[in-house]
Image 1 (cartoon, rainbow, N blue to C red):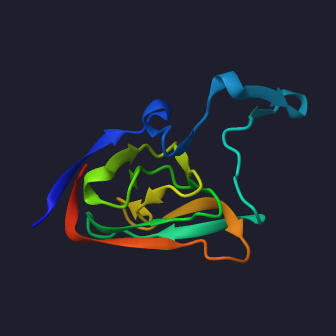
Image 2: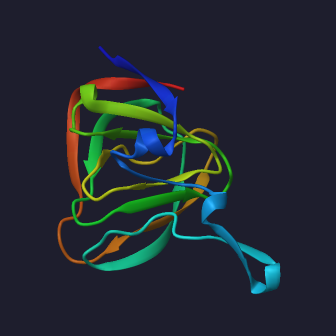
Length: 156
């Protein structure tokens, strides 16, 4: 038996309990380099007790069901798509199917999961997709997982 979880659009207000939305915001933009570059400044701040690193994750499509969540208690984790394609994010206040929310993330949007927020691993929709990741690299157990008896089916 599965439960259907419907996608909602990703907005800063809707995602605020889970972290930050990363996208171009004209209010945070200014020109640099003699006007040849626009800097969109300070869209999120990495939260970590250790070294902050940049990585590339290469996501591949998987079945649109969710039977587990993970969280990183020692640092935040940011995802920014590099290919401009839409993707999905499942988050929860507690590691239960009933607490899950599904966000449809537009290809120009990224997000940062706050420290300790339950979420599903990367969910891409169309073929392989690369993401720039900002997260923590250091000692300590920074991965906790919770598994469901009843899977969620995702509806985009």
